[in-house]
Image (cartoon, rainbow, N blue to C red; front, side, top):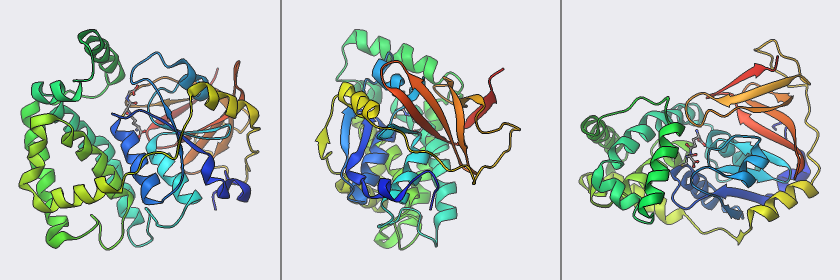
Length: 322
Ligand SMILES: N[C@@H](CCC(=O)N[C@@H](CS)C(=O)NCC(=O)O)C(=O)O
């Protein structure tokens, strides 16, 4: 059992608050996992571009979407959120013992290489027109400026290269799903299915460009099954109410016996934790948890009070505050 949870927290699955927005692919990944596990959750809709004052009040600066809130604990990044959901609701599993290792590697590839390939593919002219059709011209300009900054460290991929790569990946998925196999990695669902699903969900929403999937009938069938899993939230909440909820809760004390020091930094020291690829805004706080694959910081917000913000190790860098 992960030491960042007590038994009392495990049963309170009805207190899961997902901060997300409808058009966000990474949020769709978590919505699909929550639905697959049949876990009740509350939805807080957040802005798709900066500023997001209520969101960063909870995170301390981290802007990427989604985050999961459990009381005064905030979980950043879908790789960590998926692990947390597995601990809270282990069945049905998304890290089944027979494929958990492969699935984690596969998901890491999908969330980076496949995601940026699909992004380059869908943001060709016709795809962008469809994906951004709900925005005014001014909002489209603001979105382009916001995302330019957000992804400035990610190499640009030409749409022709993205199309070629996507066709290769779809062919590989097709062979993995041949004869209507239900899941990508064998007889059980895994995080690999959810990480590929959210990328193809992006493609499916790109108007005329969505048809690229139709030449791969097993992939199209698998995608439809995944899509049909996704259920709406059980309740809605405003961001102000989510902040009040966090301030009414006292964060749980975390056990320190699992401490894994790879940085020469002790628990109790002030550190920053920063994503290394996109939205590279540092979050500062006191290091209160440092496990092999998870870090957590204690921080105080003027409006909310004490919060514990959790990050995965992979994809983030931690530095001591001088
Ligand atoms: N590695 C992160 C990536 C999350 C991410 O890039 N989310 C997109 C939305 S799908 C985002 O934050 N875009 C900028 C924004 O919404 O402000 C994760 O797995 O949570």
